[in-house]
Image (cartoon, rainbow, N blue to C red; front, side, top):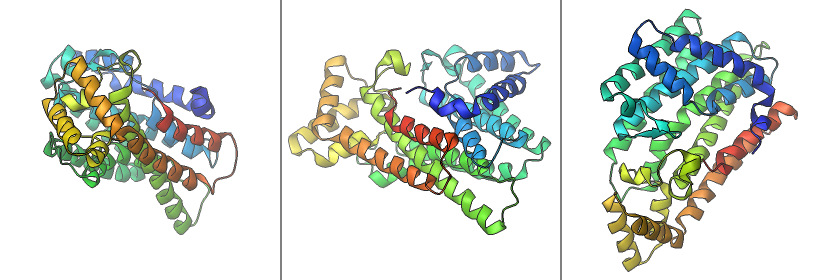
Length: 329
């Protein structure tokens, strides 16, 4: 996908986000400054800030509070990634060393905490109380998602509903919150309309986040390391049971199902065994099933966009939904 189709309407605002991020990552503490510089070099597409800013643009120009809120959303996302990499003992993020690998887990914990505190300090200083209420709820759910993921580690009989609970809290909550903040209207809407619109866009962001994470879990098996920036099967090695595996285990007959359980339980697999595991998931329609669920969420997101007037911003949000389910990294 041409990423300009998604970010084109908010390119100027995203440049402002970049400048704010540099300022907020800056610290007189040497180790925090060094980690900040490293992490800024590994950032991805700023998908969550982009969603927030695009939603805000549906009702007029994005204002300074939206840009600052988008920056804070990216800070929270950065903190979560740094902590997540430390918990998972990951060594690569987008093809570059993770903070925990380049330094250590202690540095990851401290810098992640620094970014969380910086995020909420910024919201208080700028008096963005509505955004703070939303993001306080979001970060609470993100922590719940991380705890659930640890609790479910290696559980090969994980239920589909439990998997959805994890990704709803850990991934979809931040996208939902970002879109809810973006929906704050400067047009003096009635309280009832404003509340209904905010809730609709929270559901929109949630649906995008669910589609995004399910697709990510498929890519973990089928992607190309040169594009993903990490080894295939990373989730499996970390004990994460994701939807492609759940779907295949529910479909395969006894002997092949038993073989898939044996392979998945190993976590560390050689290339021939990993290829066999992927083949069994494919035979059990695990990838097809997972992507069908992702597309259902994408369809839901597009329906929630329906009431908005046609134009370049609505089109960009539609492309963002397509990206969530069509990406390969």
